[in-house]
Image (cartoon, rainbow, N blue to C red):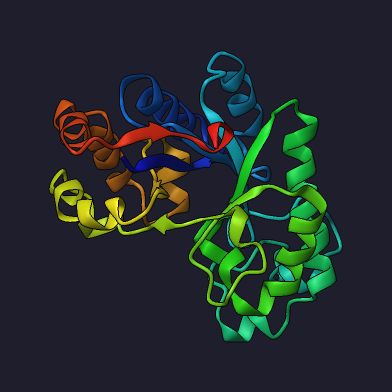
Amino acid sequence: MSKLIVNADDFGYSEAVNYGIISAHRNGIVTSTTMMANMPGFDHAVNLLKENKDLGCGVHMTLSCNKPLNDNLKSLVDENGMFYRRINEEVLNKIDLDELYYEFCSQIDKVKNAGIEITHLDSHHHVHTILYFKEVIKAIMDKYNLKIRGGFEYESDYKENVIPCVDLFYDKNVDIEFFNNNMAKIKSYDICDLMTHPAFIDNYLLNSTSYAINRAKEYEILTSKKVKTILNENEIILTNYKNL
């Protein structure tokens, strides 16, 4: 039987996002989440985790949302001191890898120092999978020795720690039939990570990202009885990274 980790990205983004993730865990199939250490809902998310100890929590390394934890990282930010919203080739050519390593470690350490047992790593907009950042991720894996979400542009040196990622549950693919349509792919792995973004909606979310309303739709599907039935009928075992 295949095991499925249903990971809710963007924990800590805002209070509404946090509440949506927790509810999708309590009332649905979400088993895991990843924390954004640089977002305004961080402290709120930490407190919620204390009440939901069976929800696994990793770190959602962030390079393209809000601003870094550290000052004076000039290669990572625009003229306003904010992270670049999209990591394109022009931005990649500006990034100092030592600065990136320092910032990602700071984010991981902030989550760790908040008393959270970190289960794994992934990243906002999959930036950890970019070939140009290979040496940074290698150094982070050497330092922290954690599981990490797959989808790399290159052959990873840490195959035993890389968990395959199903990243298709997004935007127009957010539908209950997604699970029937992609069941063969899920079953092709012994264990895999399904990337999701359930949330309730608040003004901060609406005003800071174009991917807002669909998060409420994701929440509805991830808490539906039909999805639970589909997984049960296919003998899919729900788990999280801390149980691996």
